[in-house]
Length: 260
Length: 188
Image 1: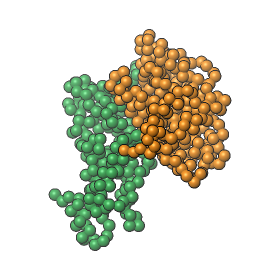
Image 2: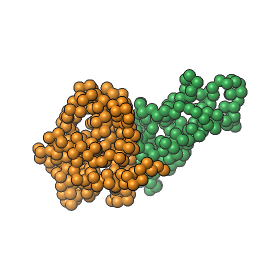
Image 3: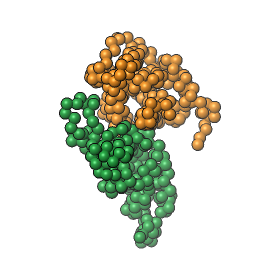
Image 4: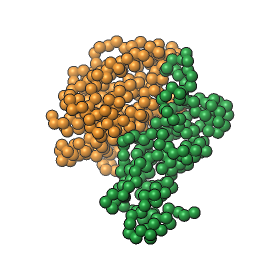
């Protein structure tokens, strides 16, 4: 695997994870429990969509270097099937109830913030620039989702039970956020990628601190989805991604090249 | 009052075929409003980073506020239209990501106009202890939000409703004195 081949995969993983979670959050439009949260959910989605666009644009440029022709951000987002998507499985999980959505967001935001702060030091200047900008936005995301986990956990018996169930259900999808395969290793060696396995300990420390504050129990399972190197980042997805893409890609599939 | 167009024409007359001075370009850009908060211009917002001539080409560097800001493309269009109006139809308009935009780049005039418009301007020194109210005895995760004086009545007794508001750059607050809700241009 050449450096650019790895870089294409790596930037796709970053972009796809952002785009898929942005799409999930956009499903909340008009369904938020209160107007402020409806707006907040979609603002977070909008930030992630903007970040995803920057990663996918860069991926397309790298693809052009590798193959002579690179796809645009739109082609990458709207004209790839599920098997070609490289997002972590965590972000394709269905929204469920508000506790499910906030638990998913909490796990993701804390990992995302650590990842972006590490990538802001990347030897690849473009990656460092995008990450430094995105990290400022994600700091607000991380603050909010941790705040909600505390409110729900230390709220009513009902909210406590629901967020605990959500955290337990999503736990096996968190391992993938800290995995490193051949793509990662090539780029970690070059100082370009974040050393994801090294982010697990600080992530876990924050999760433990927030869950303790929230009077919630730390999920205990050791087994993780995608732990065998066959997870979302390698193109292996849950049954949920196809349904998400069906809705997201409908217009470009039905009317290829449509613009407005 | 001399409009930017007149200044451009005068400058061109004085200088023959010399390029339009960058000061004139800055003047023109200062009349391009932020599409989402038209009370301030894109210059007051601090997103125009560079205006420079190089090898006969005018290069303008603009920094996006938020990655997903839907106004980014509209701003580029408005800039091109404005510059075409002063005789510069063909410029190199470049998006610059680094250093990332910060609300510390809002000009003093921009901050004053935001306040007059009813949007509390961002606090400086985001994230420092001084920017937060005293929450002694309250855990960090339950700590209260930044003190933001009400842009209408000036009271410091305000509450954060949500860190996310009607646009990506704003949070929602409520004044506990005059009871009015208001937008806060959040530090970034």
